[in-house]
Amino acid sequence: MNQEQIEALHVRIPVKERLPPFSNIEKGKKQSKILKKILSFLPFLNWLPKYKWKEDLKYDIIAGLTVGIMVVPQGMAYASLAGIPPVYGLYASFFAPIIYTFFGTSKHISVGVFAVGSMMVGNVKLRFAPDDIERTWYENGTLRKGISRVLGEVDFGFEYNAMDLLSSLTLTVGIVQIIMALFRLGFITTYMTDQLLSGFTTGSACHVLMSQLNKILGVPMPRHSGVGMLLRMLGDIILEIPNTNLTTFALSLCSLTFLIISHTFIGPYFKRKFSFPLPFELVLVIITTLCSQIFDINEKNDVKIVKYVPIGIPEPSLPNIIFVPYLIADAISIAIICYMFVVSMGMLFAKKHGYRTDPTQEMYALGFMNLFGSLFPVYPSGASLSRSSVCEMNGVRTQLVNFFICAVLLVVILWLGPFLEPLPLVKNTLFLVFI
Image 1 (spheres, rainbow, N blue to C red):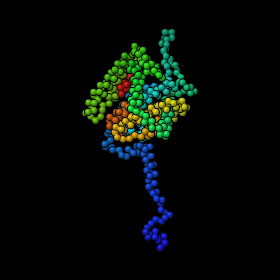
Image 2 (cartoon, rainbow, N blue to C red):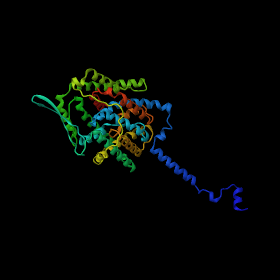
Image 3 (cartoon, helix red, strand yellow):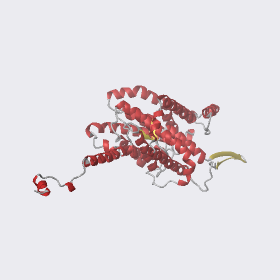
Image 4 (cartoon, one colour):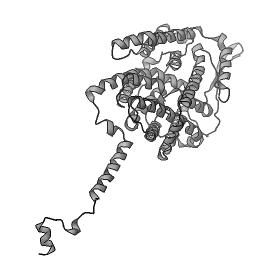
C-alpha cells in the first residue's frame, strides 16, 4: 500500500493539508483579544445586551427624570458662573450624556456642566472675551447710558463672541483628553488621595459660594483672579451691603428656606412612603417663575431674570481653530480637572456597588464628549457631584439613565424654554449654594 491508500483507509488528512499545531487556539486567542478591545472601547456593547428591562428600566427612568429636572435650573446657574447666557448650560448638559452613554464605564455619574469647570471657563472668557461695560452719566441734566467695549488680552483681528471662543476651548480640551488617553495617563488617579479630593472639593465650594453672594444680595461685583481672590471678593461684597436689593435678598431667603425645609424634613418622609423623591427644585422653579411673571419683579424691583431662552437645538458648525494655540494652557488644566471629577466619583460609586471603572476609557469618553460638543455652542463638560449623588440615591442601574436625562432637557430646549424667561437668576444662584 502506498501513502495515499493508507491516508484514505484511516481517513487521515494529508500532510500538506494539515494545519500547523495549535493554529486554531492561536486564532481563537487573537479573535478574543480583538473582541476584548472592542468591548473595552465601546462599553455599551457589554452591558446593553445584558440589560434587565423589567427589573432595571423603572429605576433608570425614575433617576433620569429626577436628575433631568434638577439639571434645568442647575445648568442655567452654572452657565452664569461661566459668564454666558443660561441656555448654553442646557446645551452642554444635553450633548455630553449622549456620548458618555456609549463610551463611559461608570453607571452612576451624571456628566455635563459643573461648578468648578464653569468657574475655570469663566476665567478664560474674562481674559479673552470680557463683557462690555455699561456706563451712565449726566449730560446737561439728562441721564445718558452708553456701552464701553472691553478688549481681551489678545487681538485676533476679527469680531467674535464668547461662544465662538468657548467652542474652540471645548475642542482643545477634547484633544488634550484624547492625547492623555492615547498615552494611558490614567495612572494619575493613583495620586488622587481622599485628602486631596476633600481639600479640592472644599476649596471649590468656597469659590462657588463667594462668587454667588453678590447675586443673592442683588449687587454688582467685578471679577477677580489670582492670589487673594476670595479676600478681594469678600471685601467688595462687604462694601456693597448698603446697596442690597431688598426684593432680591428676600426672594433669596425664602427660596433657601424652602429648599432646606424640603430636603431636610419633607423629602425623607415622602421617600419612605413612595419609591421616588419629590422634585423640590422643579416646584421652586414653577413658584418663582409664576411670582416673577405676576408681580413683574424685573421692571418694578430691578430683580434680574433669565429674559431670553431660544427654542430649538442650535445648528452644528466647526469651531475656529485660530483660537486653539492661545487656549492650550487653559485647556490642559480644565481637561485634568474634568477628568479628576469624573474618575474620583466613578471610582467611589464603583467600589460601593461592586463593579469596575476603566480610568483610561473614561479619558476617551470625556475626550469624545468634548470633541462632539465643540460642534455646538457649549463649553467643556465633566461630572457633577450633586447630580451624581442623586443618581446613586435613586438606584441607577446602567448608563441608560442618560437618555432619560437628555429627554427632559430636550423637552425644555424644544418647547418649554420661553416659559423659563421670567425665572429670577437669584433662584438659580441658590441651587449653586445649596445643592
